[in-house]
Amino acid sequence: MSIAQRRKNGKRLARVNMKYSKQYLPQRIRIFYRKHGRIPFKREFDSTVFRRRFGSWNNAILAAGFEPNSEYFAKRVPAKDGHICDSFSEKLIDDWLANHLISHQRNTRYPNTRMTADFFLPDHNIIIEFFGLKGVNSKYDDNLKRKMAIVRSNKWNLISLYKEDIQKKVFASKLANALF
Image (cartoon, rainbow, N blue to C red; front, side, top):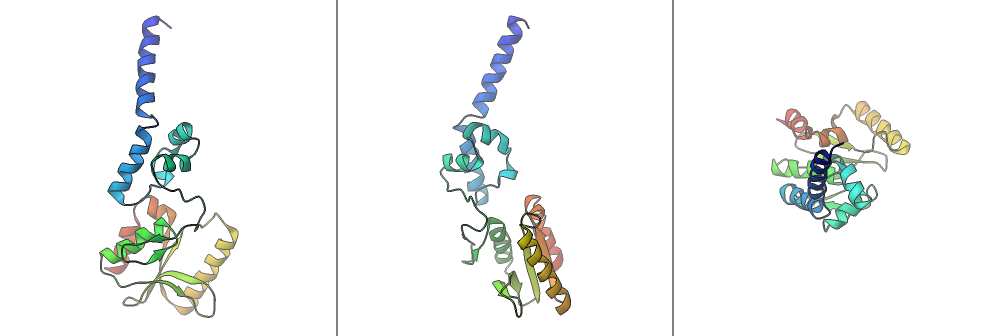
């Protein structure tokens, strides 16, 4: 490799290092937060870059000045209408319902069980479930099957949402199609 090529590569490397600096990356998280009103999911960013600079996604969140949520359901999240949600994804759903003036209740019990539905829409007689941990936890998957059986046996209307719906931002269109 010639000296000119090395210099050119060195300049490129300097630009890459500047672009992904420990100052720049947390700023991207803060900008996302200001725009969306929530901490981004690591899937929404190239988390590999953040892991290289900070050691982990949670360390990057800390560097941006936020508190990471290291465990599922470890921290409750308030929605705009005051409902307390089990995750940021549920908060997004709750906020969408509130923004569209759709009456909804949180954590309505399934009959004769200790299980609850994430959302119940009394004016529409619809249950909305966010199955965010499907495929992650076997106990969760067993409860999901039980809930689906209860819904079928009672012939209830159900809107099932999954983490892919939130990640791909299609949950709003799924809700709108079902409700309007």
